[in-house]
Length: 318
Length: 290
Ligand SMILES: Cc1ncc(C[n+]2csc(CCOP(=O)(O)OP(=O)(O)O)c2C)c(N)n1
Ligand SMILES: [Mg+2]
Image (cartoon, rainbow over all chains, first blue to last red; front, side, top):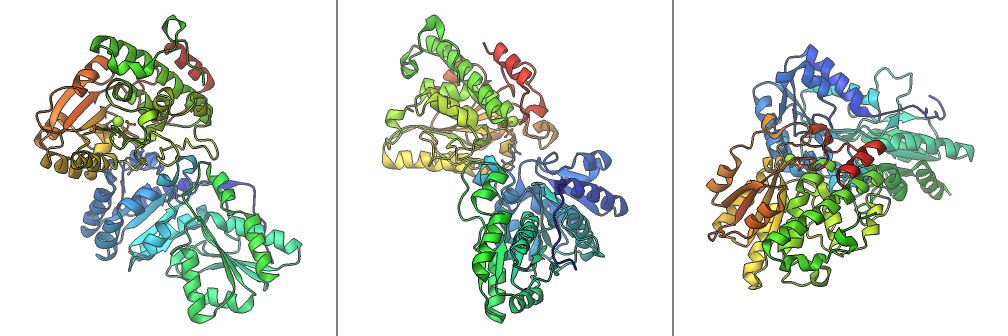
């Protein structure tokens, strides 16, 4: 393992990898269908529609209907990938997700496109920042947040193979690849991917915040503070073992996510720590309805940057 | 933001339009609608973002309601008995902001901050930041239930204000609208008007190629609503519909419009849902709207 790796300049919209992978999966498995809500373009499904016109079920602007339709398809043996903007999928159709997907135990992949504050200046109605809390609260629903294109694709492979009820964020905000070259697979369900073995501080991040945590790791290393980065791509079930190990081996944890603090990754980490190995921790997230601004502007606004993470880490170890 | 010159170089007394005889009113509303369209194009140009198609299709109906019919003004913005205008299709905030600015709720120059960092003019409207905004819309299918509540309150309070709700047509695929439609008819809310911007396009395709809405007037009628189907880009027809007899029922105005109305190369084309015109296209558009 490298002490710390740097982040490349090339960045990717995970929706591109998502749509390529969905077509590949659908070619191999006739059970795979896509269900959407007038979101063909925003979910990057144009190529899927052209290739499999009959297997794209666009129900119109009707998210509750969309998730219910997916359950009916799953009941008949299909594997629906439900593709809709995160805020409307997780917010509008919460009860369908609970009753029709999770409680009914259907293998449905709920794909929350453009999550977090990806919709920037469209504002809080379009920000999907509560989704991790809402979805975590539902029993029998796995919650995934792949951090880059490789993870997105590998998580989709796992989703189909597992047949599980799954909620998965698919990022729009451009991110660099964060998957180290030596990994056998970019995504292992229920496992946190650790980069570096620094014993001063653990930087626990998910999604868009992972590359920022890796940058923070480099900033801190230059000051002699050694950090490890925990990329949490399975939010639920949480890899408690790796969290506890980090708590035992470092002086504290900084947890960062593009979402609210009430009930998301930070809350899950916090519960794990207090039950097993109480440790010092600082939680970074979206702390209010956002003002007007682009995704980058808002990440700065809430301190969800490499600098913000490094500052928090310094305070913890200092 | 620049307003091209009103007739005779005199600023239009927008507050007085509501008191004009119907024919003259319709003519002046046309002038206001043109200015609103110009402002929309300029706002989207400065922000390099926005929903130009739906802004331009709903303009005439919004202008007719706000300047020609409803009691809406900066002076009465906090008056409990004011009329309520709810833009359910909140992605068309630029149209609403232009209307509110021209009506004097805030300076027209503020429109330049549309979607800029920390601007009060967010991509979707926020009632806590902008006077005149009644509902924080953006997720489709929220305006009509709120409108029903407002119409019930109007009766309960005895203040008898009007509530006008503007929805998209694709938006009607959300079930919440039909739940609210039942409540409104059941409660005989004849102080409630829904204006459906029937431009036959939604984000990704035509409505009838996605989840068909036709026959739309019949749907509303069967839900117990009074229905008027009109040319929704014609201020005279809109005025007539907004003031027609409602027979003790809520009124649905099916406003047949062109998405992108007023700019030839934007009209009725699905790709202009939220495409941003190039600088050359902005000039062309403003020329067509001169
Ligand atoms: C609940 C919800 N789902 C999806 C969207 C994304 N969206 C924004 S505008 C739009 C299309 C709206 O079409 P229509 O109602 O016909 O509006 P118009 O043609 O007047 O722009 C969609 C799907 C949303 N804003 N809210
Ligand atoms: Mg429409």
